[in-house]
Image 1 (cartoon, rainbow, N blue to C red):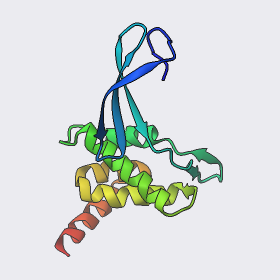
Image 2 (cartoon, helix red, strand yellow):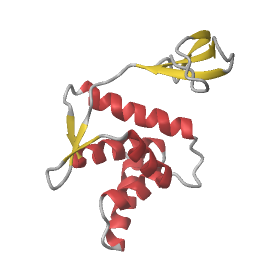
Image 3 (cartoon, rainbow, N blue to C red):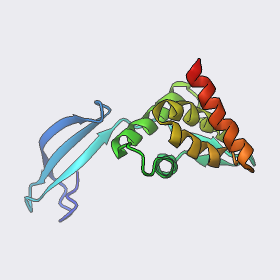
Image 4 (cartoon, one colour):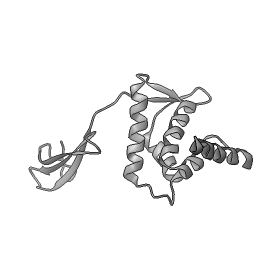
Amino acid sequence: MKCPFCNYEDTKVIDSRAFLDGATIKRRRECIKCEKRFTTYEKVEMATIYVVKKDKRREKFFREKLLRGLTTATVKRNISRDKLEEFVDEIERTIQNTLKNEITTKDLGELVLKNLKKLDEVAYVRFASVYKEFEDIKSFIDTVEDIKKDKKL
């Protein structure tokens, strides 16, 4: 691993520990030459996932894009960044477990909504209002009514 400070090619690992439920290894390293310390993360590389858009274009799945949408949906909710990271990890794992390398935007949106409803109902409605492209207040009210129905079951 190259040192990010002096670009020297040799560094040593000082400490390693599991991070994010063991899915990632966090390592503290030290440069042999300049003796500065830095942190690296090691994660299993998964197969690339592609999202098939409504117009049939294929776009690489970007977890950051989903995370941005979830962050917007959870503004002023008591949901930590770590919780959102875990949420996106779970979505990625679910897609990977289908053994397919692509998913439609419709299927991705439905998967996110299904899991988001369990996490936070307000965030669910916010995300749904963008994903389902509500055109009027009735669509919004119908979504809220569906949540109320689900709670009664």
